[in-house]
Length: 119
Length: 165
Image (tube, rainbow over all chains, first blue to last red):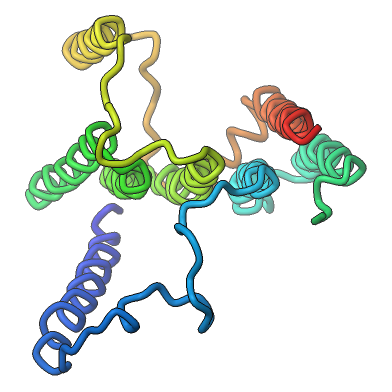
């Protein structure tokens, strides 16, 4: 079964080599190289960049990432359930609904606390 | 099946090399991105072990989720890295002891095996098998997992709220 994934590995390898070859080899041979400070500055939507790029982000971003992970884990549990569903019957459906309902409590809590609103 | 061995060594080299960069790198953002590579290497090892579902979970949760969380955590802190940052601190001896102990435990488990943890390895497609087992034998841990996720979510919300006030 792992042998089927040899194709995945092959595609991965070809994809990486393609990018490396075009950017590092082919493009280096073709492109003219005339850098100046204006060109080398960081692109910031056409504006002059101000300050460093490493600023302190708001905690809200972290909260969104956390909520994302919780529901990604939920989705991971949904996959094997969905694949085995036609053999499991009604009881498995109830079980999954309980699972989702418990997590919906969390979503409702987050919603009520205003964690999903951007201020 | 003889091709599996070089593939294993290749994946193991990627994983260990990336993990070394994670531990020894001086730019913490580079460390986080190197962690992505290490996770991908582990996913490849899972595929090699015929654990495709675990490999998919590894990519989805660890590469897609945990690393994003780590990067956000790095961006939340004010500048905590740079050329002069120390990668060792005064916990060196204790952590070396713990890591060494874990290493010998793993070596022992590899050598002797822990019979209580040995399980029957399913041979056919494992996603339906996992689904069936999860819904029948392990339904209680499955539901407890949702409570754990709920607790994580609520805990994160409370912590973030405290941060804001």
